[in-house]
Amino acid sequence: MFHRGIAWIWLGVALIWLAIPQQSSAQMTWQEKHDRAVAAELDVDSQEIVALEKETAHALSLNNASFFARVYADDYQGTAATGEFRDRNALVSSIEHSTARYSAFVVTNISVRIYGPTAVVTCTWSTRGVQDGRNFARQYRVIHVYVNNRAGGWRVIAGQETMLPG
Image (cartoon, rainbow, N blue to C red; front, side):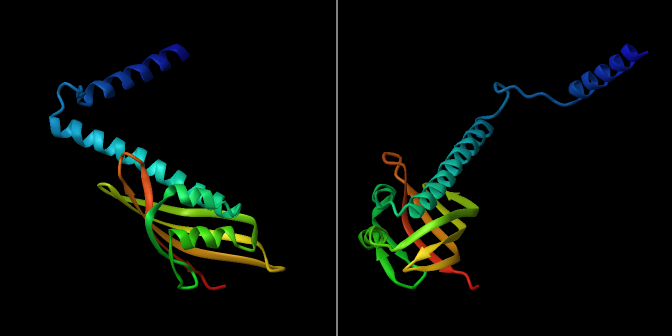
């Protein structure tokens, strides 16, 4: 009885599989192949950018300025949570001279939108630590704009941090 039930299940699966139209890659149009390839590339690029955002949080948690000299473009322009304008040199200097010591620096809610060689990323930074002898816990909404020059990969060209109330 048990074996007969399994046979019916397999027969049902086979009938469903046969009812679904199968399309081999040879039957796909050039446009369909192109669209699949682009989607796969976007997925890889999105994963790479998410990894860079996580590396950014890790580098900030360690006050590691060398990461920013490597990943941020020479002509980077950004706005700190204080409203202060920072080019890449000012950003690197502020990280090198930071008195903040982080016990936690977590990046969440990462959203990546890719437009050709440009990507716009939004995320949330949640931080905790000690600065100038005082404990702090802060949250920021962050936006980064990346450009992919293919030769050197994704580089941050612009950014803004907004400290959230509370």
